[in-house]
View: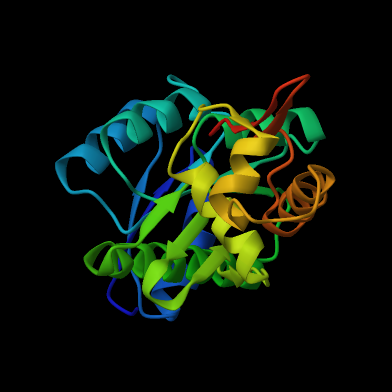
Length: 226
């Protein structure tokens, strides 16, 4: 993982210098930009392995830079900000950031979380060569029947795995409980539709899909990526 390029977009030079020092000490190459427009231009000219992005920038806000980058490139972004409310965190993540760290931060934590995200992205790139795929914060490695949630292996039963894959491969499609029973459990299944409800509840919790694996009242379920 050494010699990977990190782009720091941070208008406070002392903070940028600390990040540069810490990551270079760990063997990374680091470039710094002090405005949003400068950072965006540098990222477009030579896409880095990872971006550390300040929220409050003097020209283009960090959230806007994040959106601009994620619309054009697939690169991990960690948002760094003094804004620590839950609403701000959700707003930052919804803009496309992969992680959100509040200031003041521990440099060791920033480096550790950056390494975790880089490993997940490397795994996703390798998985794509083996009929596997990335869906939001989940990485599915089909050859292993494995699902990873932000670098953590999700412990799923075989039926939970099959059900989750069904939803992930058909985003926004509504499935009735009966259709899911037929597809996942088979036509000769003797249980009832509550089996589907229980499995969906477990998947939501294990794979952190609250708000994404949604109930369509009176019908069934669908997966809505964010």
